[in-house]
View 1 (tube, rainbow, N blue to C red):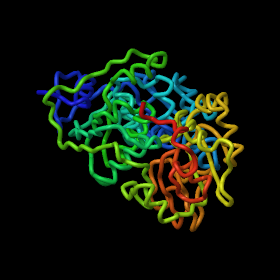
View 2: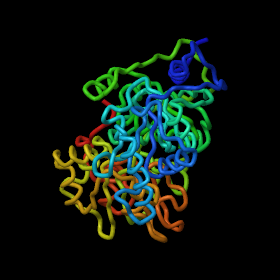
View 3: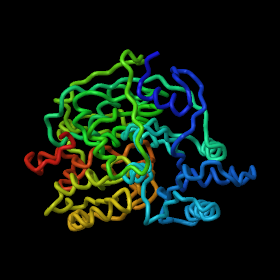
View 4: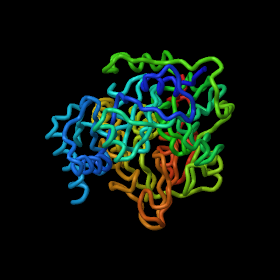
Length: 433
């Protein structure tokens, strides 16, 4: 029976010749990851059951990312639980604050997750790793405890939904973020519930790997279990010199069965903006321009859009300019090494001189943690992935979602703004090459 990309990886990791949607299988993952919030609960579960040895310690990843550096006493306690566990078991893949960063940028960027992997992460945005041709999905803290304790976990094989973007966007400021926001607006927040998205088409072939990671990151915002991209020359070039293990890509079979197929023309898609309070409430930036939506703060960061390419795009727009009066800005490069790279390229100085507060390697206001949450009646424009009520601060505040280009342009005007209003297209850094 022909199989899709996701089915092929699951079959391989389950030791089976083939799998089909609806099958229950036990898989041996390549990476099992938790963060300071989720892993602290996992560790408590393991301790309660007296589990003190692990069959696959080199596949266990523990990344301090959400509430670090500790913002208060409870967050310090959570981090300490993880830190003590990592020290006790001498975990090889423990990433401390100031040394690692946000897991969903850190692991692919530094080659810990590679093409062909099966990744289980105790965080809903673990689907991000599908951007580098993996089957990756989020699990709960109890599931992570089971995976760490046994080196395997059961899952139900999802149906696959094929998503095809024909053509290449004509607007140079369009990015992977805009394609995925457009997708979610078309199929809804539960439009791919417990299904695997498989991306294809000319736009996908031309999209940077960083852009693919952004699109995979927001699969969960459409209810999907995972998202996956084909392994091509762009990904092979990305993995070269980065992958810490041999890659093992697969190809979808001719005649593979898909639950649905969506096809769109990407050429005319413009930058997108998700209005409160759902990612699916997305409209073209041109409509937001007409409505002249004033913003109070801009956040450029999160596991969705804080990679070096994102920072370069935003800095290109901000260079030599300054935030609009009464507009605040926070920029958080996703990892320590991305921060260092941005520092060496002069991007940190550009953000700082533009009036942004800059720090490194933490989720920050994305989940309402700290470092820039909104107050009552305030509006945030964010490059993150969710804008639910109360997600980024006060429940009476509002959050709009967009790309780094729209965020940077809007920071300069104080209103949601098309980048073409503040910078010439000739200076654009397109994600589509």
